[in-house]
Length: 538
Image (cartoon, rainbow, N blue to C red; front, side, top):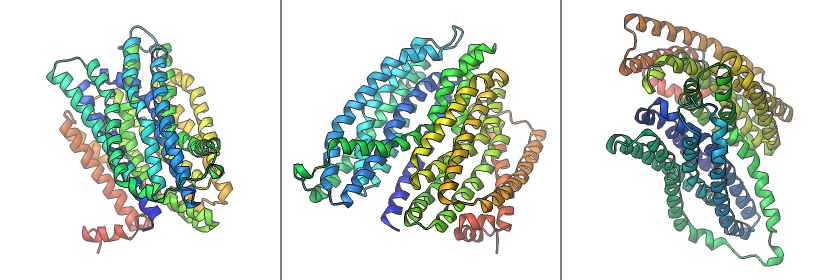
């Protein structure tokens, strides 16, 4: 395996595990603080994620590109000067971001809280935003160090530090909330303030991990560095101009989901209240849409993009070499693997929404409705991630920014009127339409730039849709039969029904796709070997 592919694999595995942990921790946290209080946690994390995405999504990749480029040119001093000045700059950036988020906390809370009958006050929302802002002091500096080490081909520090950061944050979050509520008999509001502060503790854990790797790798890095004479040094203005050029498109991709959620944060509750829906119900719907169901919906997205994103470096390599035929082959495979996994998973979640929401949270007709209608949007989330990555691979990053801004504009314009017409479904539809516009623009640009013809993918999509319909019928009939025997009145029974129905769905979808040869074509020979080991085929 080449060092590039090995590094990509390490980063992908680390990111996948980190994201997976970031999805599943919410289930025990919900059990500790309750549905009526978890909305406060969500109010803090949407603006925080935007600030965090700016630091995490763009800087490591930009710095690693810069350092690896100038190292390849023999100018090792450029990276040294960047990290030396960048350390101070990123520390200042972190402090400024912390101050800015504190100053904006109350104005933002005033926008979010629309009426006095809502569960939480402006002061409580502002406080939780202030508590989460401490992490911003550490994260920018940590991102700089990650990018610098990646520039020297050291990918393990980034992967391990991301994982440690997430584990420390979740342990502190769940442990702290449990102690406050169950041991100290404190209130849930205090537990949530404590929990959002866990982002700062997690960031410190990630920083300590990076410091360990820095001490270990520093002698090797220093051995190749030679201080360049002043007349040959790259000007700082050119240095940071290049960094911003690399980072801005990546930042926008990382911000995509958070920006769409921000539109809901600023408009959803006001629009619901204007439609005559009370504040507490509006808050419940908002939490279900942007936090609780989001965590379940994103599971197939993480799985699918984990498979398909591994193919993206291949697209970059062949496009740079001018080998468009191989680019088309890689894109065919990427789209097909993505849809082969995401489409049945999203539809399956939609059908089993009642049991899944009941098991992970509690029985709720509202929660079931939101999850059932929201789950298919997972297909669009996955397509956006991959099409944006392909555009970056073929060096058309500016179109990522343009398409995302257009999609965000569609979401912003349609959100309030659609909520007036369709309640929470209006916000889901506005998100789907916004992402659809973004994806259409991305695909149009990709096809133009690479002369790509999607005939093969279109045929496979039709086949995947037919297989998904057959799977959906099998799952629906199985679920109806189980519910007729005994309704899922407990979490255990809800889990059992979900597992049985999912097993039936996987069996039907997997068997038919295997018999047709589609599964082997997309997932490779290892699938055949696995099927033989399990004695599914001869």
